Image (cartoon, rainbow, N blue to C red; front, side, top):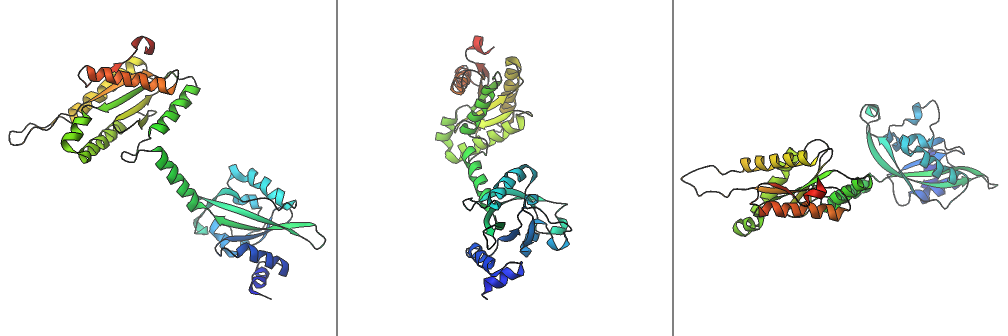
Length: 318
């Protein structure tokens, strides 16, 4: 008997099943191997199933394979397993989260979510009758984490960490789909181009980062903050009237100007005064129309000397 037949015996498999196990394990040695009966109950499992907090030796009742999945994914896993148990061999991998932990003794106290992929091979008796399945459970948590990190990078600005234009516009579309009507404010630090030419990109980046963090502290619960481009920031203001949104924006601008006012000194050259402006608009029609109106308000605010909030098309936005 070869070593795969020996492994098969350790988890209660025949020589034939041991060869099937060989095929399952030839690419990996760290996966969890499970033997299911015809109803999907776990009758044998490799020792590393303890990583999921399941102790087969102490189980009074056979656990079902769907018991490993979180409640919201159990039905989908059950459907997937049922097709294999009925004899289908054309079923691919199924991915689902489990509450797993490295120390089974503490699993109930501090569970964490981990994603696994499940592959099943149907088993048959000598006369061709379906006789359960062999399963291979492989951790895909690292891949899931990588996908999440890539998604986060795709929807955030690398300098400030705020939601980028794509993500903010997606949020606006969702609000428009529900009827819109909220107020949105677009902020920008005045004179950024002159600041960049005089002090360089590094200083300009520091100013933008600082302004982004300042806006984060000024936003209220329920507000949504995003960065439209290298200079402009947008804040969605739900449940605010035009008057309330304007008063809030003006308070933000006055606070920023006060915080960035240069200290008076006769020994050092006077530092530049940093100010910001804002444009306001109501979320309606389309995303492009909404942002255009807000940015027109920003243009009007800057044309009036900056450090103020303005509304373009006041009659339509009121």
